Amino acid sequence: MPPALSAINITILGSASAQPSSTRNHSSLALRLNGDVWLFDCGEATQHRVQKSSVKMGKIQKIFITHTHGDHIFGLLPLLASRLDGTGGMVESSEDPRTNTDAQGAIPPLEIYGPLGTRAYVRNGLAYTYTNLGAPYVVHELRFPADPPSGDYTELPLHHSELPTGRNISQIDGVWPHIFKDELVSVSAAPILHSVPCVGYVVSELPVPGKINPKDYIPHLKRTGAPMSVMRQLQQGESVELPDGTVLHGPPRRPGRKLAILGDTYDPSPIARLAEDADLLIHEATNAHLPGVDPSTKPEDTFESVEARTKSRGHSTPQMAGLFAKRIRAKKLLLNHFSARYAGNDDVDEEARKIMEAIKALAVSEYGGEVICARDFMSFDIEMQR
Ligand SMILES: [Zn+2]
Ligand SMILES: [Zn+2]
Image (cartoon, rainbow, N blue to C red):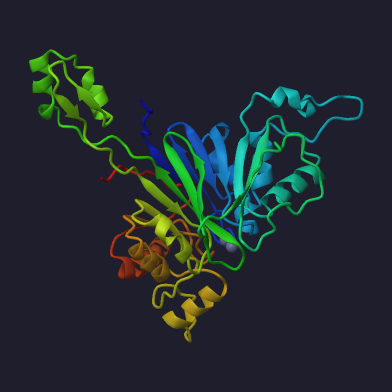
C-alpha cells in the first residue's frame, strides 16, 4: 500500500521581479510535501528568507530553477554552501574532511534541475570561491532542441561533491515528461516563452484513494464473516473476494492535486496541456496599468501600451495571467514576480493594499476564479478538491 501524501504546502520566500525591495525578495518558493522541501527558484538572499520562515533548511531535497536570470538563481550558491555544510577550505597541511568524498557516498544528493547553464554556474561558482561541501549534489539539465545534446558549458572537472550522474534531459513532443517520479508525485516540465530559455514545472500528485462509503461494504463483510481489515484494501481501490465468492470492488482512485509553477513568461502556451485543470497556477504578473490607483502611472499609458511594453521584456500583465488561468481551467491563480513599484506589505499598508487589490481585479476580469497576490512569507495548503 503506497503511503499517502497528507499535506502540500506552499510558502512564498520571494515575490519580486528584477529588483528586490524592503518588502519583497527575489523569486523563490518552497513546496512542502509531507516532510520534504522543494525550492522553486533561488534568487539572491533566499537562504535568509528560509531562516526567517518556518521552512527547514535541512529538509531541502530538491531545487528547481526556471531560468538562469540572476533574480532566479543568484541565491543558489550561498544556499548550497549552507545546506551542504560548506566551508572555504583549510590552510595548507591541514586536511578538510569534506574533501574526503568517500564519506559522502552514503548521503543522498541534493538534486538541482534547471536549463543549460545551471550546472556550469554551480560548478564554476563553487570552484572559484574554493567552496568545499560536506554532502553531495547533482545537477540535471533540461535541454532545449537548440541546445547542444551533450557538454555543459564548463571546462572544469566535476566539483568533489558533484555526482557525475547529472542527466541532460531531452524533450519528448515538446515537453520534459516525468523528470522526477516516486510513489507519491511526479514532476514534468515544459518550455514557456521569455527573453531567455525558461521552463515551467508541473507537480502532480499520483491518483489518490476514492471516497469510500462503508455502508456499501460492511453488511457483506458481516454476512460472510470476512475480517474488517478488508476495508483497508477496498479503500485503496482493490477488489476483494469474500469467503462466499462475492467480489467487492473498492472505489476507483481519484486524480491527485496538481500545481503548475511557472517562471518568467510573456506566453506560457507550450505548457498549457501539461498544466490543464491545475489546482493552483503560479503565474507572474510583473507589470500592470493601474490608472487612478498607482500614483506613478504615466499619463500617456494605456492598458495596450503597458501590455506591449511588458511583453517586449518577456513578461506578463495580470490580465495575461488571468487569461492563461482560464485557458487551462486552473482552480486558483497565484500571481507573483511583481515590479518593485508594487510594495509587498499590503497586509499593513493601505496604499499597497489598494494596488494589490487592483492587480488582483485585473486578473479576475479575465479569469473569473480565485486570485491571490503573493506576499513574502505567505504560506498556505493546497487542499484536495475532488
Ligand atoms: Zn525574473
Ligand atoms: Zn527572467
